Image (cartoon, rainbow, N blue to C red; front, side, top):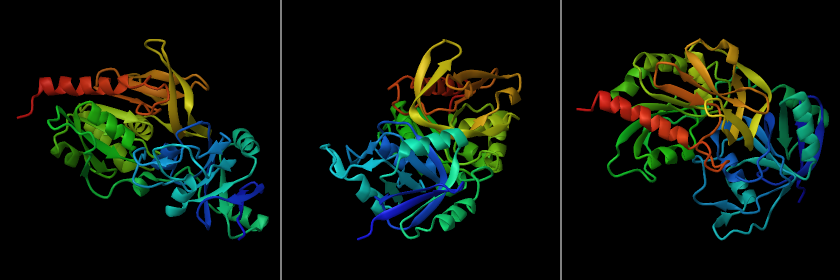
Length: 371
């Protein structure tokens, strides 16, 4: 059986390797992730929709796939690139290999190529469109297919990964919730919903297109703006909804794409990063305390710090490149971060942000109790 696979980039570079997932052909923006562990969370993170994820750590899959560590119902990434995929995981909780998981969900993947060279190329040139194929080995044809793919800029992928209708998170949910959070689903990770349940909150997840009036009808104590894939600028309906929630002085907590959408609602701007931030070891400084958090990140767009109005203060910055990692409004109960506080990079460096959100919701509840 021929297991040859190819990865072709838009600049004409072609890598030959071996197929290690589903057979077929797929394309997307090629990015690299520097995490040494957490590949299952990466595979099931909806924020990777439309991307070919290159893992910089040389061996992936050594602890298999477990039953309880998914971040969504199914993988959304376009494809996977690894140096070596482990076929014999060692973990008593493993239920299947990564290869079997990829095949089951139709994810095309390639191994056996020089991921260090690929990472250096992406670091130097920026994220490039690419195609992984087990069907077509013609370099020129594959590179042409890569160039024909749409750019990530201008793509509203939140509408691709969002839920179709409202639903309630039940795992770990309290029997008598003290708080009610509505989660605008732009590609929400289960880890965020687990943290809300740990706060004693009931979480109602709603589609990205939900209007402010419908959210307010649910009588939330606060609204969480979730993570998600793609460019924030085309997600105009959500920006309009957020602006109406701001007018109602609703407590808001934005994470990742939610942070970017909140900035747009404030009248700020966003821009595309050269190769994005993807990994679990990014240092972020809290400007109020001087404390440095080790964070998990996954985003290709960023908030323009200079575009924020005076009443919106930058609270966190990335120590690698000085980019926006957090902001808060001076008078409204609203704040956000670019990174993922629900993830265990630090491992618990950023969990205080959920407590901050809960405190804002309790203040609102005390000022205006539910009937």
